[in-house]
Image (cartoon, rainbow, N blue to C red):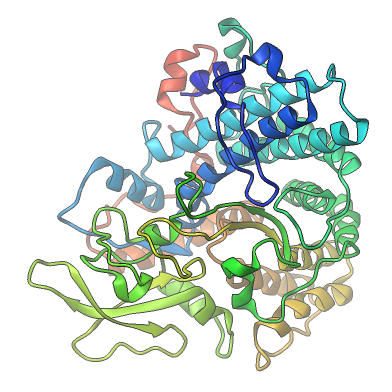
Amino acid sequence: MKLRYILFATALAFTSCSDDFLNLTPDSELSANDFFETEEQFNQALSGVYAVLRSTVGESGFLMGEMRSDNTHYDYYAPDRGIHIVRRENIDDILDDSQNQWTNGYFNTCYAGIARANTIIDRIAEASIDETAKNRILGETKFLRAYFYFNLVRYFGEVPLYLTEVKKEDDAFLAKSSVEDVYKVIIEDAKDAIAKLENPKFPQNGRVSKGSASTLLAEIYMTRKDFTNALPLLKSVTTMGYSLLPVYSSIFETSNKNNAESIFEIQFMMGDQGQQSMFSYWFIPKSNNVELITGVVSNTLNYGGFNVPTDDMMRAYENGDTRKNASIGIAEGVIGSDGSFVIQAVKQSAGYVTPAGKIAKPFIKKYLHAHSRERNTDDNWPVYRYSNVLLMLSEALNETGASGEALTYLNMVRKRAGASLPLVNTTNKTQLANAIQKERRVELAFENHRWHDLVRTGKAIEVINAHGVEMKAKYGYLASNSYNLNQDRLIFPIPYLELQLNKLLTQNKGY
């Protein structure tokens, strides 16, 4: 629960770090009063804020950012109707409620990060450390607090604003703040981060930079439909040394972490440090043995089969688009005597046709790279890439009347995607807006942007309800009241336990 995270944030922030992987290692020898004194100690505490990011993508982020949209679904497995499975499915089907542990976990995780950030912000003001280091630490911390609140306000609407370290229980109970007030804080934090952080240095080390903060603030303005203020920020990022990698699939290679296209990615590291990723295992089919996919003998019946690309997503790729094979694979096989899926071959997704007598299950392969231990992978999670900036810039230019210039940035992304893809040449504002959103969908597929894009462009209700008609016609297990998206369900419910603990909170409408 959020209260627990707030009250113990200081203790949890005692960490050690490395520049490459922002390690999290608690130190029980120090108390809060004598810990926040040196630059090294503040860096350790900052690593504790970064560490929280892992839980925002490894557990719930893909459920809310991708499965809630028309991009992905799940592999229904009748023998396993455990609550942890059903509640993931409920998010996709828009049948979730305030007791869903996955959306509740996301809410609590964001506040854990905010609590740790607040402790740093409050205590560093009195610390006798180098001013340059102090500005960097504050800049990174303000970015992270803004990022957590940005996700909270987009997913949950009005939320409590904690802006100082909570030192006693009474301070932990706040009422919701308006969406406008939350955005004011987010914007000020992002602006402060931009002012305090330096331009990226290549090779990058995984920490946020002025480029990260500028991209965050630009997306905030885009979400607020303030394209005029987003434009200069996006243009500034194009001058900071970022570039598109020549080959799309290479962006996600574990040997290419924090590459020239990376603006902000969440750091993971395989091994015994507790920093490994495993989301690729969530995304592969349920099967007694997935060795043909992973290279590691493992059984995914209890946790695989989520974030499965939909038919509509598969159709979104044009012929010749190299991003399809880079992002999606096909597991081909048959149903075994026990009713489970037996994988017999792994195929490319582009141009694939299911042979007679076989079953084909698409899966996300963007994050699937060599590893030696089950559910212990080395893949980072991309939050902002340079191609995203180019597409946001194209959108902002189109929305502010510069459609001709917008084409330049849109077509930069398309050229990298495939030499045979035709360039977009329309300057009709509506047609170009549709082309940009289509491009965002395939370029940023499975990176947790689709749901937010649908909501901010006002297309979510129309697109998801139409998608639901197709899904219910195909899958008999879907409830008749699934995929009934309305204005209220554009945000998620406040966790039930929070409402019981904090009587100042009220539930979101529709829940």
